[in-house]
Image 1 (spheres, rainbow, N blue to C red):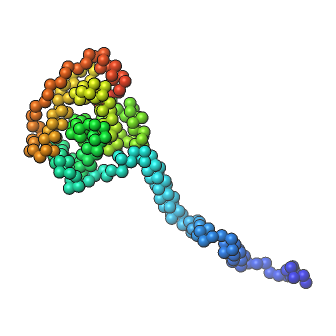
Image 2 (spheres, rainbow, N blue to C red):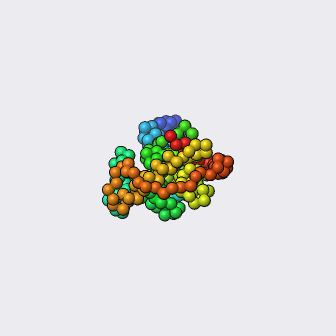
Length: 278
């Protein structure tokens, strides 16, 4: 009988013996030609085939990881804002910043830790843009009372009530329009809008606030007075003075608003960042 042929009466190989032989051949192939990583991959695949729940859990974890990676990639365009913590302890701030954060937290009945992070960010952004941190905080207080999810019927969103649709380009480095509800991103974009408003008003802070709030045919004096008063109170708090929440403070006089046509022209070039004052 030829050594390469089977006897005609040989019994067919059982299913179990055939499977065992197939596994032995697979193992020899893995052992001879695949790396340990390949073997681990095959083993994991075989395990997942028999464990549907485990496979689903791993798929969910992988999806979440990919989303986090994507969000992280978008945020790298503005690391100075996104890398800062959303909350911090008062003890980690310089004394003048800690006094401001504590005073604001008590006045507006918000948690001190996220307020402390906003105060720190306001100082960082203020240095970069040449704006007083107390002014940025006063605008936030007036616009939203430090509610990061505030929204107006006009489409203004977040802490500084930025008109998101009008400033999509400014939100793009922060991840897009949804960043309007991220406190630090909203603060940064609102500060940019405020700086541009002040520049268009010839460097006048009251004039910039009038453009920021979008006042054209209404008198914004009350809004401007409230913001500047809060700014002055915050400066006194930072200096270590005991200041009642609604203490009256003297304010310098500011010039009359520009004619309506000029204000309208400025507003067309720079959309308002907030709703009309109430």
